[in-house]
Image (cartoon, rainbow, N blue to C red):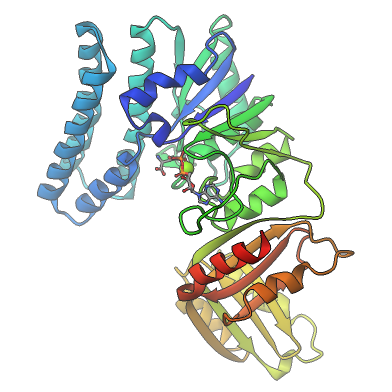
Length: 436
Ligand code: ADP
Ligand code: ASP
Ligand code: MG
């Protein structure tokens, strides 16, 4: 059974929604994961922020504007009065809830309920649309099977145990629709898999049901060899390994949620990145295999802080790095890049929530320096230890840009550079024109 995920632009208008059936094979048993209509989650974020600030009039105005968009949406989506009325009921229910939340004490719990409404709306409206055109489908409530633990880690076995009976209950049904992004947390509250999380949902369901393939349908023909929003003339990559794709997603290739590759990788489920606007395009196939002897792609991750700890006590000492890392562990802060010399360590973090406490503790080790507004440029390719010339080519391409850190050899397929964010665009363009 395949899992097909359609992103925000792929369900972004009634016309696009109707065209999904050109891609979905309604005769094949499959699970279709939908995102919210594009723009909706951003709007819901704004509504939540207005409530959190106590600005109820602003929240009300935002809700009204968003509801207006959906009223137009359903007018185009449905033909018959009966289904248009059903669509109206759906909208009234979800927008009624958004309005009602103003009566309660507003906390991050209510905020997450707000964020969940986008995917609930898109899937329910699509389900009603399929009823209107006579295509049988079953709506699977993601909140009944998608779950994360207290560390926000998804529970694949739980998902298997809870989605399987829902599928088995409908042995003759071909098409199952469900919400991306949303889940329950360990307190049983509504939560989400973070922005862009519908990709993660698809991969998790794929893993949970041991799917034959996960397809991520979006607005571009697969993973490109550089960020198409910044660099002109980028090209799609036909094949990537799970590790390479994970690296690119983690280091900024927005086409994939940073964690979405791991569940598919664990259960060896092929992932295809495909283009809804050009369904015939080959896209990108992600499997265990990798194309050899190539520099494949470049990605960039912003909002990085570099921390340098210098201490002569590190010289010939053992246990220094362990104690240093323990500081980050205590504050649940993950480290992305690390470089060391005999008297100093530089490392990078993206989550600065506990930077103050971390810096304070690090001061006990030696002098601490911080560099903010940094960007990691990640070059992915086949860089095994026996290879030569790749690092030289990369560095030659950015010789006019100041480099704060270089990381090579951590894996066989990654070379990362840390630059100032103001130099990112030039670094990406220069690498692109010289490497490809
Ligand atoms: P969806 O709403 O379908 O999930 P996203 O906007 O999350 O779509 O992801 C697709 C977008 O990712 C593309 O439109 C593109 O601008 C952006 N993107 C960034 N880096 C890359 C890359 N390396 N390859 C392809 N797309 C990328
Ligand atoms: N709708 C969510 C977002 O915009 C999830 C997704 O689209 O993947 O982040
Ligand atoms: Mg996305």
